Length: 413
Image (cartoon, rainbow, N blue to C red; front, side, top):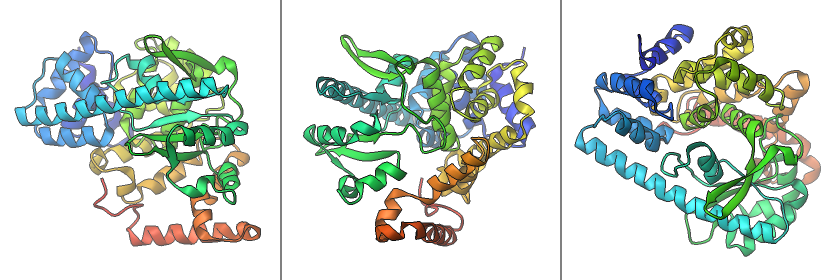
């Protein structure tokens, strides 16, 4: 019987005409957590084909999956060359320390907001790690994502300032510009003074025309991050819907996001996967759920059963699927999306297709056009905000021309 590790690469190649290096294929099978006998056999088979172990290191850094990569190799008793193993161990240890630091900060902020009587919902981060992996060393975390109702943003700002945070951009909380951020943005970036702890204060789950509205109690759950310390996070189908929309909004350009979705799905049970799909797609998640499942099939060998044929009938989903896979193939294995020629442009275009109908397209166009940071930087008087789309389109075209289709210079990784 053919191991699923080989089938993974062939599935993507045969379906959309992309191919991956042996090192990338090894990374993919190490994302299929938890590891059973079939996954371990696939890891060993994929590792036997690896030629450039330092390329694997570059892939792990790009996709921020050193924890899962090392756990997969250890489970399969695969030992990389000593110099490569040392690099990966160091990166995984750094990732684990960062995750623990953010977990402690999440608990601290959870207590502060609870004592203040404010609703605080922690997205991804330590809460997701506890729910999905139950091991801080397995999942990379960059910052704390905290959602509050729009009506509580002003109070949350005061709490964060008292808790030692300052905004990355002071304009976000200035009296003359705060309403611009609240109207056109989804979050404010903060940093705890004197530390490397970053936080995003959300009042919208996403800047896509999806997952709109207040979070209802039924969509929330308590998760214990450490013995005796729990925080509120998204629950069940709401969590899966959010992760799918979040990943799709970034074009699935970093595979740690797909690993988050995969671990929450039922494995080896196509009927349960289909039931999950039909529940979650009705939570205002658009096509992001179907796209995520197809990518889990192509890259992580998730068995979709008859759902695969159902999803493949949607031509738009097929385009979204191909767009994501192409961002990951070739130079995309080690280059960030915004460093690929027209990589970010591909993501922008795909965002218009995640919803349905004219209203969704217009909403996404408004999101793309009215960027709160650029509105503030433009220094347009408030009565002239309606002219900002002209400024935005001009600056976007100039940037793409300057960097030959990239958002950032080619040296960016």
